[in-house]
Structure formats: C-alpha cells, structure tokens
Image 1 (cartoon, rainbow, N blue to C red):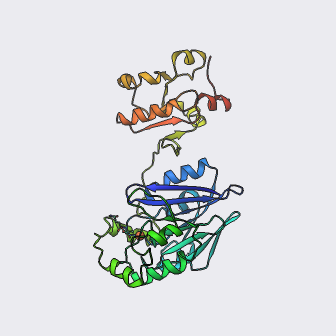
Image 2 (image 1 turned 45 degrees about the vertical axis):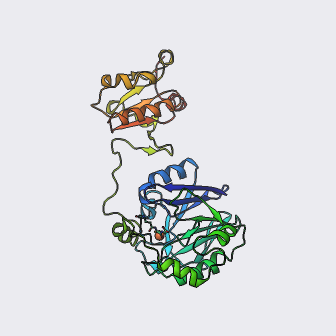
Image 3 (image 1 turned 30 degrees about the horizontal axis):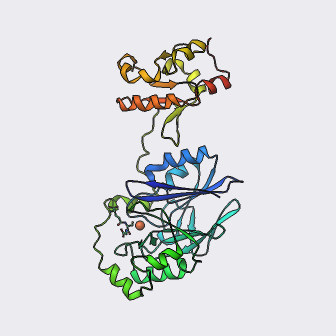
Length: 348
Ligand SMILES: N[C@@H](CCC(=O)N[C@@H](CS)C(=O)NCC(=O)O)C(=O)O
Ligand SMILES: [Fe+2]
C-alpha cells in the first residue's frame, strides 16, 4: 500500500493518504482546507486517483479540505451520517466498508470526543486511523460537541483496544511531535486510560482537564457542517494555468510558455556555457548564482517564468524572486529537457 502521513502545523493535524499501488485508487483521511494544493500536488505526482476524502469527525480546530478536493479533483465527500454535514456524498455508519483498489477500510463508530467520531481500520495492513478518539498517550477532549468521557472510554476499549496488540495507530493530531503508536503501547502507557485505568479513573481525569477552547472553533464548526465549502474560493494565480509541485513551487508547462511568449519574461538561470549552446529567443540570462545580486536588472512589468536545463535550479530561482517580493513568478516545468522533448522552438 502507498501510505503518506502529512501534517498541518497550524492545527497540528495529521492527514493520511492511502492508495493501492496497482489500481492507483486512493483515499485521504482528514484533509485540511489550507493544505488542499499540497495534497493535490502529492496525489498528482504519485499518479493517484483520489476516490474519497474521509473525515474522522466534525473538527473543532480546522476546516476540512473535503469540499475543495471534490471541487478540484472530483473525490467523493464521506463523513459520519450523525454529523449530517451538507454536501456529503457518502454518509458513513458503523460497519461500512470503503474500498480503494485491493484495500479496504472498515468504519468503526468511536463516539465520545464528539458524537460523530469514526475510526477507520485497515485490517490487511494492521493500521487504524483513530481521529481524536485516541491520541498518542492521550485522547480527544470530551467537553463540547456532545462529548462524553464515559462513551469515549467504551469506544476506545471496544473498538480500538479490541484490535490485536500489533496494530499501528495513527491519530488525528499530535501536539508534541509524535507520529504513530500501537495498540500494545497505548494499552500500557496511555496517560489517561492505559495501565488498567478504570472508567472511573478516566472520567475523573477528563472531567478535571482545563483546556481552552480551540482558537478557530467559531470558524471550524460551521465550516465543517458544510463539508468545508468556502464562501469564496481561495485566491490562485490567474495569469497562467499552473500547478503547484509537492516541492512547493508553482509551475507552468513549457507548451503554455512557448505559445504565450509575449505575456511573460523568461529568466534563464543556466550558466553562460550552457546558454551558448541552446537558447530560447527573448529570454534574459542570469546564472543562478547571480540572480540575488542582479534582481534590479530583471524587468517586472510581466510575470516571470524561470528556466534551466531540468527545472531544478530554476525552481530555486522562483524562491529567490518570491523572497524579493515578486508574486507573479513560476518555474517552467522540466526546463530545457522538457522543452526539447516537446519539440518547442529554440535556437543554437
Ligand atoms: N490548542 C488547540 C486546541 C487543541 C484541542 O482542543 N484539540 C482537541 C482536538 S480537536 C483535543 O481533543 N485535544 C486533546 C488534548 O489536547 O489533550 C487549538 O487552539 O486549536
Ligand atoms: Fe477534534
């Protein structure tokens, strides 16, 4: 199975991408609205077909990326039926199965942090995605969203600790840099319900926690009740059709540049010897090492597209130009190698 754990630093949320390496069908668990472009970049670079986004619950601390992923790459929105979120395509209930290629996730209701919390279990890989029901050495708070410590204790024991000890557990958040755990570890060491803690011990602990409400709860809850559909789409560059690489660089296709030469300034950052051999007409040439000191010589009346042999050095040039305050800048994907592959015009 293809498996990636992603992190949103602002909300300390984990997002998980799971895919079948053969069929390329993929699902994403708990996408974060602001990270949609990152997630789509990874999905695109790995050549995956995202069939579903799956939320573990109605998050109080961030808005889901589900609606935006559907809008951009057509995945179905799946979340707990109990939440009754608008725009849900698949309303999940305990016992449902989500298939992606040869793999499947079993849906287990694990209420207690919220009344609509789900845990997704991949039996074949011995992995469970627990959302905020069970965190590493902790668990989701129970003081809002129909939370109940008694119910959470039962959910964890009946639906998570009932998995074999060797199951790996992947939580919805971690606030201390930890990434995954196991059933065996949490049974022994969970700070709130491990080591034979009784339900009474657990409720005593949870009732006496004093956590401030999540900072973005007033935005997150209404946002998640509409599956993350924004009032207004996030702003994206409009001067060229563009894709964001998983490396974080906006890229334009060589073909678009070749057919829109009058709309951009091409900045070729190859060394002089390379430019002496092949060049794109009209491009200005500044070797990468001199870009920062020659910024003032680069015309800024048009968007700038950067260029080199393979598209690697020119990606760094995009970074340098952005840091200098320019906004309409992108890399020509694949550089001269792609340009030549596509038989676009250049001179010797
Ligand atoms: N400080 C965070 C809130 C963190 C928080 O309350 N997280 C929830 C999950 S949505 C929780 O259950 N935390 C349990 C804990 O921190 O022990 C924020 O402002 O967003
Ligand atoms: Fe939560």
